[in-house]
Amino acid sequence: MTVTPTDLLRQHWDGSLPVDVITIAEKMGIKVTGEFGMTDSASGCIERHPDGSFEITYDITEAQVRQRFTIAHEIGHYALGHLNEQHRCFRDHPSNFMSNAQSAQERQANAFAAELLMPQSIVKYAIQSKGVHKVADLANVFNVSQAAMSYRLKNIGITR
Ligand SMILES: [Zn+2]
Image (cartoon, rainbow, N blue to C red; front, side):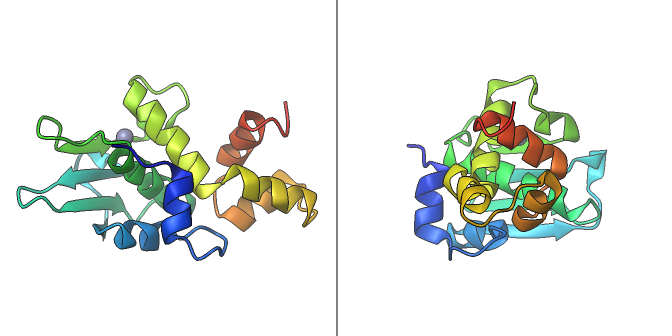
């Protein structure tokens, strides 16, 4: 069974921006651990422990916007049902966060992360009702990178 970003936001989001992905993960029962640099220079991972619990680990030395995207992406792997007996762990390097990532599951986790961090309806509200128009300002409000916001705006048909 998979859960959509909209479901998660409805259940676990307090409505304030930027979306607090650590709190959302914790409310889902996932442990979130920051590490001072990770082996093999991964940005983050999600793991299903033998006792059935889940843990997201992320690199706290990376830019905060990257940390947030990493955590949202790992939540995506969990919510999309990617973890199972055969696949107990996803380990993500920066290449997995590209829109042209090799595996379909990575691309799905990225799309999930984008909607969780930058919900379509909220982005449109910020632009249309709050008058936030510059990419840099929108990126600030949602605490994402300008690259992620630009891509998002194209994806939801705000810009071309
Ligand atoms: Zn991944």
